[in-house]
Image (tube, rainbow, N blue to C red; front, side):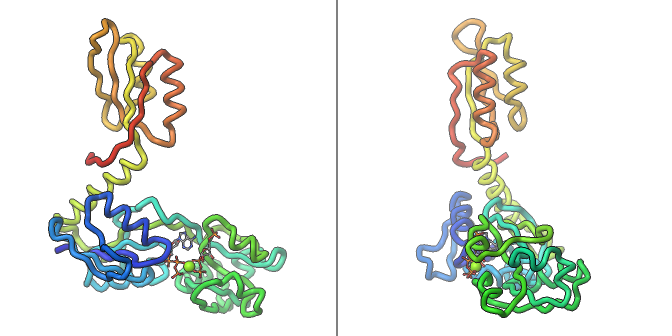
Length: 282
Ligand SMILES: Nc1ncnc2c1ncn2[C@@H]1O[C@H](COP(=O)(O)OP(=O)(O)OP(=O)(O)O)[C@@H](O)[C@H]1O
Ligand SMILES: O=P(O)(O)OC[C@H]1O[C@H](OP(=O)(O)OP(=O)(O)O)[C@H](O)[C@@H]1O
Ligand SMILES: [Mg+2]
């Protein structure tokens, strides 16, 4: 059985469970279950604190894990990314009261509150701010400056609302960009069951970011239409009963959909239909 770690709660938990469910894996019934078996697919899931997942995977006790890139780096565990999963996106940034600190190098000798000391230590070293002191807190670090325990913070920023409400502003370059990732122990080869899981997860990523576009167009306009909808391999073209017309089917990026549909209409395509892809293997 393949053994996979999944976040049991927090910002990545629902996204991870949704993605595995879409990939055809049976997930736990209740948020209190810490383990579940999908016997049909030969996978056992362990629901763990997201910050602990890289440590379990690096120890070799679990084959794979879903965690945040920032959490994996923070743990210092020897894991490598196998696949980026496209959810749980955030940046990790320094912030302070406006006008107090304005660069990472300027943190030398200052106190920095964070829940991610591993990420911050690495970055401070990079900027030669070796005399900075890290104050490790479990959360709500935006309060640390007003309460006098730190001069700056380093934290996850998603929308920036929390920082704004605390009267803080980011400074310096983003320390890192993060999203949910699938990790394995560094250097671990991939057994066949991992290949199948990867194909399924990639299928979910493609199904989420592409739609199936179908339309009819006069045969002489086909080349111009196909330029707009090249598809992943090549579009499917079939004859229509109506003389001189063809039907085209092509996978198109969701982000581009309306621009492409408008352009197709303008060159004379008609009956342009977009539909969701429920699942795919490419
Ligand atoms: N708005 C957000 N808040 C916190 N983490 C986020 C957010 N958006 C994305 N993430 C990502 O989620 C992961 C953190 O998840 P985690 O469950 O540890 O945090 P949490 O939801 O704040 O839980 P906790 O209450 O334990 O702090 C990181 O990879 C982080 O980059
Ligand atoms: O940029 P935003 O959209 O405001 O999101 C970022 C905030 O969300 C997280 O806090 P969380 O709610 O997880 O509380 P915590 O600080 O206790 O972890 C994170 O630590 C930031 O405080
Ligand atoms: Mg949090």
